[in-house]
Image 1 (cartoon, rainbow, N blue to C red):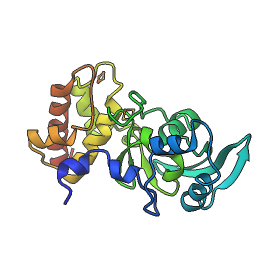
Image 2 (tube, rainbow, N blue to C red; image 1 turned 45 degrees about the horizontal axis):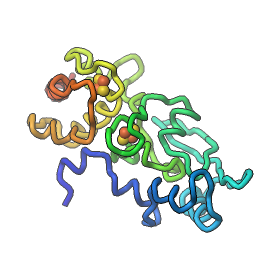
Image 3 (tube, rainbow, N blue to C red; image 1 turned 180 degrees about the horizontal axis):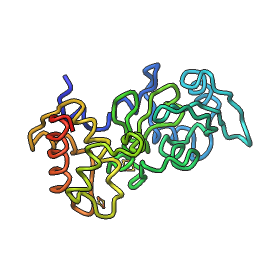
Image 4 (spheres, rainbow, N blue to C red; image 1 turned 90 degrees about the horizontal axis):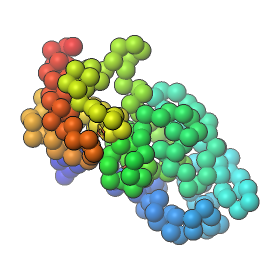
Length: 220
Ligand code: FES
Ligand code: FES
């Protein structure tokens, strides 16, 4: 049974499976297909199973398709190659730059987004696997001009320095508080253990999350 730690951490297992249950990782894909090229055996299976509605096309040997991404409640049609990560599709194609790419290998959590309510590393998730899923990024946290209590608390508690890790921490913090509105300090640390801050702001981040939880419990 998954514990809170597993729920709050980016769901690496879901990243490695597509809807049909086929194991599929970016690394494995690149290894199998060769950097930049897509084999005829692999790409059609992805396009058919994951991007059923996508219009596949091949340009100079590189498979691409138009996928529809639902990001923060808005639909976007975007042309991606089979190897394009969700992080790259969001940042480079849609200019949704909240998710940061720092390690680009599923280790730091800076690129964390929610997909169908589960945290994923967007640098390790293929854009084609995100078709039809509900994607939430840090841009979706605020309600118009009103910041989310977590965002307010991060500012109040001075929980960021360079800020590269902050969007990921915010997404993980939100998932944590969605699952547990009154986490213990240990549960906060555990819930955020999938995120790394090179600037070492951890104590302030933990304080901010605890403060936001308290505020949210009081209806703030
Ligand atoms: S950039 Fe994705 S986990 Fe570090
Ligand atoms: S504030 Fe700089 S990496 Fe966290």
